Structure formats: C-alpha cells, structure tokens
Length: 362
Image (cartoon, rainbow, N blue to C red; front, side):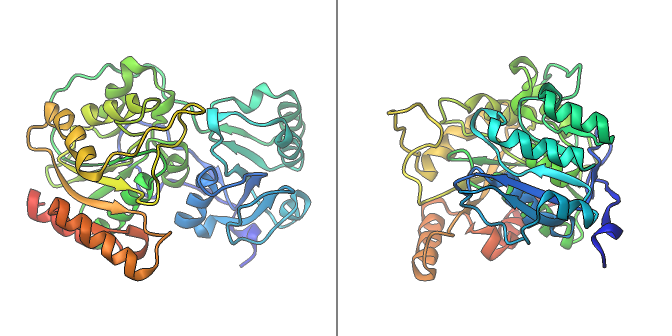
C-alpha cells in the first residue's frame, strides 16, 4: 500500500458525545524530532508511533538528535513526494516553545504542502515564516493545545457512569500509556470504555480531548467534568492523568482532575529508576514520594467528590531493569500495597482490569 493511499483524515477511534470538537489530522505523518536529546521530551512522537503506527510514515531528525523512533528517516521533499499529509512536532519541550532551530524545517514542510501539527503552548501562526509558507501552499497550521472556549466552573455534582483516573508520582511516568492500555484491555473484554485525553499527545492519538495544562485554573475541574460527562452506569471513561500532586510546579492540574473526574478507580503510575522529580528549579531536588505516600496523598482529594474512590493498581515503568530485578520490584510493590503492579507495556493491563471489575462490579 502506498503512503498516498493512506492520506485520509483520521477521526477519533474513541471519541463520544462530549461536545468536544474532534481534531482531524491528515495522515500519514512525518514525526519531527528536531534535535531532541532524550526520550522523555520526545514523548509526543514516540506516543504516536506506539499507539498509531499505521499513521506514521517516517521521522525527520536534525543533526545531534539522540532519539530514534524506529521509523524510516525522510527529508521533507521525500515525505512530500511519498504523499505524507502532516508533519507532527514530536517533542514536548520545556515551556512549550518552538526553538528557532526548528522554524526553518517547519516552514519548509508547510511550503511543501504538509500540514504542520503542534502541541506546543505557542501558536504556529505567530511565526511569520511558517505562516507565510502555509498561506502560499494552502497547508493547515494545527495547534492542538487549544482548550475549548467558555469552559464551565466545576460543580462537584455526582454524575452517572464510571471513571478511572491515572495519577503519578511525577511527570512523564506513563499516565497516558497506562490509560490507553487499560482502555484497550477493557474494550477487548467487551466493556464499554473510552480513553479521555488531557494532553497534546493523547489528543493527537484519540482525536479529541482537552489540553488541561492550558486551562485557566478556575475552570480545571469544570473541564474535567466536561471531558467525562454523564454516561450509562456500566460505561467507563479512562482518563489520562497530568502532573503529580506532589510536584511543586504541576500539582494544580492533578488536583483539578482528582476533583473534576470524580474517579471511582485510581491507578498510580511510577518510575522506580527516578530519584528526584523532573522539571523543578535548577539546584532544587525534590525526592519522588514512595508509592504508598503518593497514594495516601491523592486518595483524600478523590474521596472529597467520590467517597467510594479507591486505588486498583500500580503501573510501573520497568524498562530500565533486567527481568529478575523487574519482577522483584513488581512483587515488592504488590506486597506493600496489596494491589496488582504491572508494566502495561510489557505485561498488559489485564490484572488491573481484573481488580477494577472485582472492586466496582462493572
């Protein structure tokens, strides 16, 4: 099958009647990694490759790039000739900016007729070179990190349906991957479940959602309520978590989700190879909380709006550990918490979904 035969717009595979506008991206994609140095900051591109491989045609890397998504390397001209529809910025840079070094590549892609897709805080149209190139070719500039207008204030009113929220001991510990794995396992079992995206990568994967880190703080819980509205009693919304309640910089979005999503079930995501929180100020090291302390910190806030909220499992990133050490870690966490502990990429989410069913009866 040629790339050109796959250039249709890809609708959301999971979007339901939330009232949110779907994000229609023109496939296939050229994933732009620029000069990114680590996989943590390349999570947007790597997430798309993991969860939408059929839509990813190639990657574009600058000199010095230290990330390889396993796709064929394509230049912009090669991508255009092959029928690629969009160049997607695959990097989540600190602060959500677009470095000057990327602007030329993005403008060249727009000039070649590729839509430019960004999950950054800045707007593509604010860069004159990119905007002019898009006007000349008719390419679209798509800023995914744009929240809906007129979001409501949260009410705290209990609504029907079931909700699972992933929370973390830090940023970038697998909250999105875990939610997607749980949603997939639920659907494989015939359960009525939808993944609800709250960040730019999740929105690109799902086709709809709300970028909660762009929402004014007064409306965070209202946005979470809007994202997971009233549903059938047996329906599950599996909600992608953001930030960490213990993080000095990003606790606000976590708290908004804990209140607005009214979770029935919580899954804690953890990276045991990490000693200190990511993204804090230079020279300031905040230790990552233990899994038991993190659970004890989150649960009272979840129970403020849903007294029946409970943890149903741990999602552990074991990619840095040998098999024997990996299993010992999972066993230790299970003993400490009494909950299933899995790496959803290596082990799947079956044990967590088993626990969800036993606790909630759904």
